[in-house]
Length: 64
Image (cartoon, rainbow, N blue to C red; front, side, top):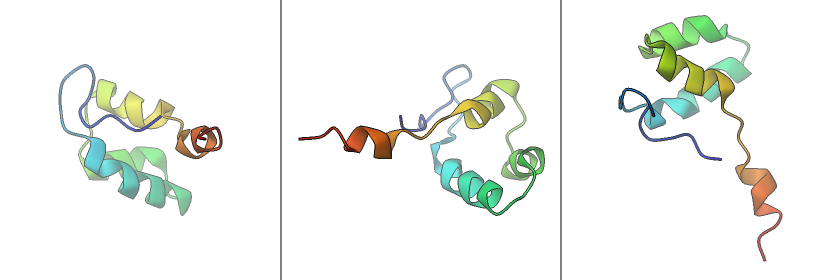
């Protein structure tokens, strides 16, 4: 539901980059260029950003 603080495979800290990635891709920038600018070169880190689905808002609906 929330982006991991570190990459699951290599352990690189990536959690602090999520907001910038989300904002820049939301503005229409190419995902590949944003990942390159953020310094994410390993495929394991890139895959986390490309496959992550933000479900926090949907899960909050079910909170009592």
